[in-house]
Length: 471
Image (cartoon, rainbow, N blue to C red; front, top):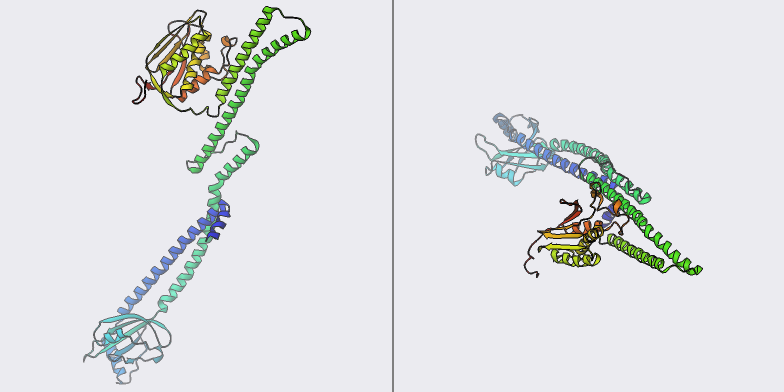
């Protein structure tokens, strides 16, 4: 059995399906054929028994047969009366039959009927000539009364011959059914697995060529259609991911090229001064060193932002904690005041507790405040409010044009007015990702009461910490 199972598993899926379909149909056909044969056999035997019960001899026939058996007259007892074999039995078991070669054996049931202890008996016996017969014995009512019974027999060939013919017919039909089932199973396997073949070819094509534009036609709503849709969705997602990766690399290269070119130029000037012995004026040298330091700082910030976006766990937030958003904002405000000491930063922070990753939330708020510091005019004001989970950071800078608002959270996107300012164009992308991972949303909008821009962060939470968590 195990060897058979191993052989089946070694077959292709199409062959296994065809074999299983053929086997299932063969079992069903065999079961129906066997049931049909047994039902027919039962019906034929029942009809024979009813026919035998209805074949009782008439009184005149009985009288003539009794006289013949007793030696009276010149009558000869016919072996068959009305198409059935007839013999008489007395209480002692003696048999009177015209043809001794066709004599039927006498059973206890027959003697009991002859003695009058039973009304009749029905059984199957083999005659002296080897013919199987269905036998019906019933008590004879004669005048004067006598202890005798008549046995009527009919050949079982009346039942077995039609059953044999039926068996051969059912066998032929079953064979044709199995052959047809095999053909149908093969067709079903081919038709059912055609989408799987297409999917296999598509996967092999993608693996061989890395072509993610392949799509499988989807027909119907069955499991194969769902599998095809899933494959199409997967390849579309992979294609989008690869396009984003390529775009990220291209944008990163573009952003890195500018500070690297400037840094190279400044370093070449310093190196040439050392090689030629021509000293650079102190003020120019100080400006060059300041520029080199700023460019290195910009490169470090850009690389840090790229690492943040490219972390393997960037798509998954870290351990979530219940933290006070107002506390995180106060910490971010201290850093913002250090970066813009000439600015006035006002804050009104109502308590609000959220569930999120503290480091990611703090980095997001720091980026929003840095953005406000960067675009605020000298000695300007930044207003920060936190009310019922809505954190608003409002600057009084030049604002963002309405046509640029849909792009502010895209990676490396920078408005024309900000291209001359330091920055990588990744800060707001990191903000959007961090806030969304905490279940919130972030948006930028023009200030309603004047110049400037409002950054609005909304996070679900509560004004009080959950029980068991300290303030």
